[in-house]
Length: 128
Length: 128
DNA sequence: CACATTGTACTAATTCAATTAATACAATTT
DNA sequence: AAATTGTATTAATTGAATTAGTACAATGTG
Image (cartoon, rainbow over all chains, first blue to last red):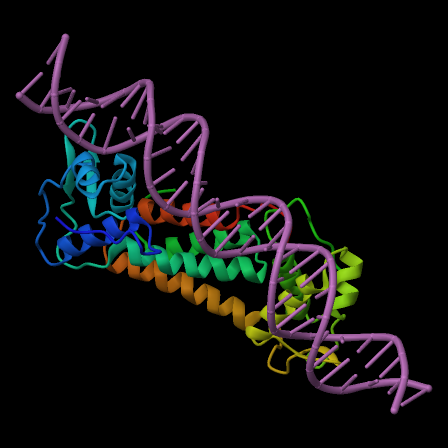
């Protein structure tokens, strides 16, 4: 498995996230592979299962893995190699929205602007 | 002057920042104009001078104003209108969405991700 | 030169969100 | 049914962010 630095200011769930993502990136974990259970990670690292679960939920949110209660967690089919994917995109979005907030742009205006961009670039797709 | 929402979760110095920046953006404050002193803002809003000073320091950091001890604070020459900043924000948004399209991220997923970001950063509600 | 006015540095008190854990629950497998 | 899986809920704790109290530094004014 991997190891954790408890002295680090980086949260444990964040370290788990990074370690798993790295394993996926280098191909040590392939799409469809079963990941260690949250309880296994928790017991090996000596932390609470929820801490491992949180890392997995973030990995799922970013499209790298998927989890099923009772079954386990698995590497997503789309998570091949070192694709940047949603995690990096989110960072960009976050940065842009943060700028807008600082500038005092109203939420609805930003939302409208985003939707216009979305519809422009996703031309041909459906969705509201 | 402007007003502040003390109920908002948005920090006071942040609200001052946004208000001043908006005044610059709409041309109510022109390059070279003298800004209200930190003590004037502080007394009118009923906060500590350091709180107003912090807003000014952030505005200076971002190149919108400059401050001189003993003299006061002034709108920077380069801070004409806010369209530049607005354009940058749109550019960032466009770039992020474009990345998402290139990486094959589905529209709905991106939309959800954006909304999460939006709600996270606009959690203050009103108070800008 | 004295003195007011300006922004700022330093420190401490407080508040608030993030992190983690304790516990219980829900879905799936065996 | 029992075991194994991920997750929801709640609470304790910690740590960073926010704000204020106070003192200092630089400039303007008489």
